[in-house]
Length: 451
Image 1 (tube, rainbow, N blue to C red):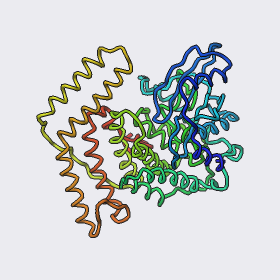
Image 2: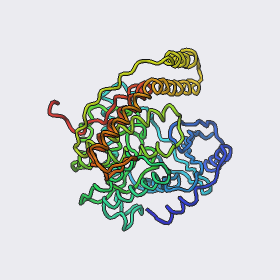
Image 3: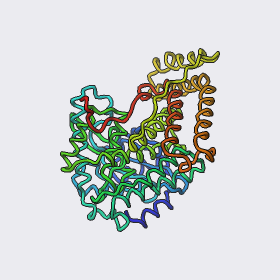
Image 4: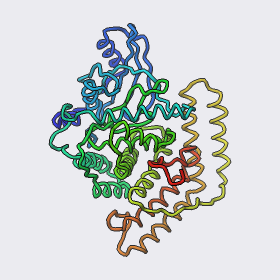
């Protein structure tokens, strides 16, 4: 990566732009007026629009409002450089049309296709799209890095690339000013177990999987959202794929891994995928820890799900067997019927009768919040007591250990077991808000002996 430009991007994050200014810029670039301007939902830090010019040209505008300078390296201007590199390859990515030099905005073509992979009800079609997707990943990983200008001497090995990414995410965590022992344990484990294979680094998408690609029929049409792209380990993209498959399930995931192997012409390294599952999960938990804006109901679900997945990823990567935990058994409180009444009103009096998608979405988000508050009222005392008991039990096993729990001062397996209980209780509280996600896990990477 061009280090000097990367530092410029971090120091100069552009100024604020109004929607009117962005429209005027798009019209100037397109050389035509705008006949359609449609906001696109999704993403925590960027705003996007699907745009149709009067001459019929379809465009995609991505804008990132300025933020205070921080350790975070990922900007829209940085993303633009990956689109520029990809323009000289066969990788299926939207074509970059223009970069605004004053505000963090880029304009690309609007690639054809849909992104709602989860809505496909035909497993055979989903499998075909997923196989085409992993073929596109293999094609991306085959791009000659030396010809891209994205790497320098600091990126000579995969270990060096992963270490550089880890330093960025550790700094992003630390600048929040709030400690989280689970994140610290994960970062320390990642630093201590860097993968160091002999193969050369590759261009990595950095957030690959359902939701970040478009498809038509049974073919993938474009890889989207290159915000986290970097030079690194190809197994990271397969870890991202498995993470995104939690939210948008992929049929027979091990077969999709085999399809990647066939397209790439080399076997995958399951151990490195398991390592990167930890890193991927840690990234997502850090993003939530930094209080990135988002709907509160979705934040509740995301926190519970991703902390649970991080513990599961650490257990899988280290071969640690975690004990089964029974849910807390607690009666309803006097307020439970009131919460239930509010949830019912949000559903029947608002969501089911409104024709406004924004109102429907807001009511569903509020329902998640009310369900969580109901469970906090019901489960809260028992959860606090269970956590206190778990801490006392842990401290009794490790003389000299103190609270907050320090990674390194407590044996890894004991600390992981403690966090497993912590996230299980949090997941139980968030379960009514989470729906089907409450029981979703990472997909298997290989067939079991019973298959």
